[in-house]
Length: 92
Image (tube, rainbow, N blue to C red):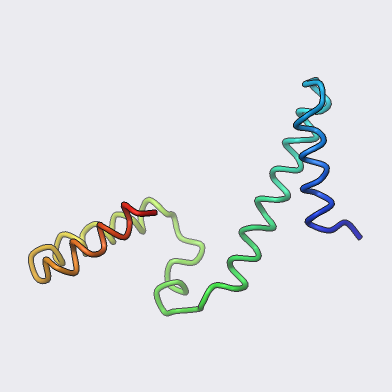
């Protein structure tokens, strides 16, 4: 069985080898696999709040549009909360 660490080692080796079409192709495959594993592990460990359940599988741009509308309302109704959320996002 191939472990995540095996994949990471393979990526490190390929990143330090001569760039050829073959090595780039292998790297691309490994990057996709590692990205998938990262997303899978996050989705398994992430708390299943009502919000996360609602947005799961949705188009991120549409979700952000709804959140933007909510943030505009929050700016008027609760300016401190609005500023706090923006500050936390800017710190990401």
